[in-house]
Length: 84
Image 1 (spheres, helix red, strand yellow):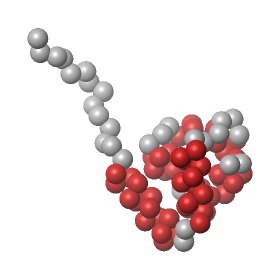
Image 2: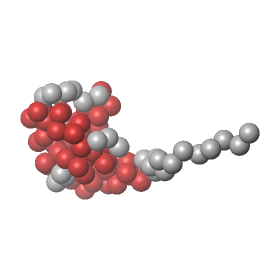
Image 3: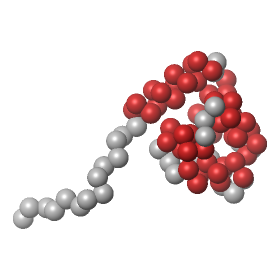
């Protein structure tokens, strides 16, 4: 997927780089890298972007909401001590 196509789809969705990163559960910097061509998105992220591009705005936003609702919640960064 070309960087310009990736950015066009994100903008079509009306999402900031940060919002799209949250949707995919990745860091915002990765979205910037995809849009500048520094890195290529994984096959899964590229496939999702193509799916978003082919859906109506309403359906794309519904899918984004569904993805976000099903992402694992972040775990606390505290270490849990094991009991011996």
